[in-house]
Image (cartoon, rainbow, N blue to C red; front, side):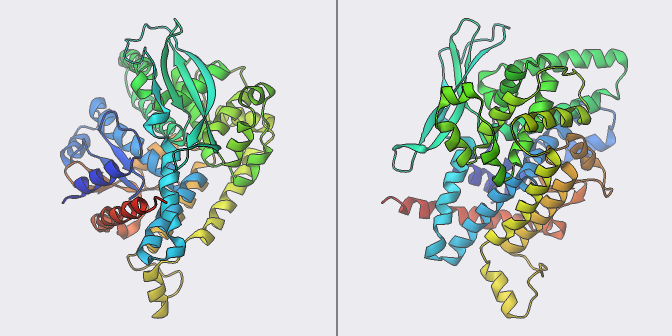
Length: 465
């Protein structure tokens, strides 16, 4: 079985990101970036036709979208926690340590809460109707999730947005999930790519391309099937009063990344506006207690400045805007938040389960930090290290310009990037390698995950009491 077939099977059993148009995908479980609609010939075409904007858009657009998912998974505080949870579940099963097998169930629960099951997304009577070119109306609300016994759980409330037509007909109810924040980041990275591509065009060409981009952006923004990609941008634009689509995505992406990096100790500091407390009640405190990052996005959006937002935003504009939001919400400064997030990232190492292969090597005299062998432990340590280095470069709010630069450059300021699995099963490496020579063992790693995920699901079936 080839690498793509194994990834396909893993993702079928372990749902991750939505894939409406299957041009690329990111697999949480194996941390694999897939550009399954591309083959090595597309790369050759790109190299031989460097001025062809269409091939650049096709190839680089897929790369930057999926690599942004990888960056958020490996170089945010939320992502590093989730990464350790994945590897701990693997090692718990590998060890067959009865006292640690609960970590497998935790992984199932964590993944479910990241994207929410389809049950929590509801289509309205207007879900399949053609958009009438009028802005959607919206309404925020909260619900409760079901526990593993099928009972409503007060411990796990969630926030959702209801979208309506201009005639008040329900279109869709969509949870503001972690995946919706991640997709906002990925879409924003594509928009940063578009701006970069347009800068090389003539004035006339730029006008034509701009019009096409605007039409496509509106079509995507108001597509009921794509609301997971747009719900965070809609939320912010509605609360702050942003009419320009690109600005809405850049600001919502910066806010999303901040929420993914928010340190655990500051969640209790967040202020809750009176009207939100009145509307949602005690669920607000519970959502902060369980560190619901989608809810935090909503809270900070309510505190964000609503005046003097330019259609053309610099990184400085975005940082100043965020600084005002966190200050109004009762949080420390961005610089302090970044320091706290980095400290917490480094403390996460204490939560890593010992790897039996690592212990065997230590018994044979290997140093604790000796990673010159292939094991789950060494792969995790490499990912965590690369992620933390990337965090210091991206900052607490992310930096899409740096991500783009890193695709095509290899200087010291660039991010470390993962290998990319193409649709013809070829593996390529762009920019600076995050995994070093380990990327050459990608097939071996995918096979390991492909094999162990069966064992994880088998254990899950045994937990029915």
